[in-house]
Image (cartoon, rainbow, N blue to C red; front, side, top):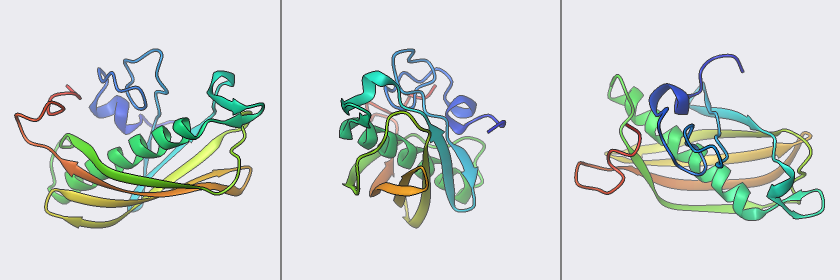
Length: 155
């Protein structure tokens, strides 16, 4: 993935644990555009394990949550023909852990926009490792307005 990810392009100073490029102890995910969504690759580190060789479910949830949130922000930006994405937050998300997710291999995560209604975006998520589905998910993400505590978090 050679192009600049959306997190680095639009929020280089973000400190979010999952997606903040400025959080040196965070996951620093790097999501890239695909048709109707985003894609990313992430290789977990040994300290992300729940048991030997397998990733903690909370790490999986964070990867899907942040990736889905950015999918929503980019979808709203594109819909509105804006030059930068609105700040979005997670209203709800759920994941289904389909099989243990290995630690020592790249994880491939894709997202797709299923609907946009006003400032609300529904997203579907898929996490694969070694060609097998390890987790699926869905989320509802909402653009926030000035006055919300997260409003300026990407600047």
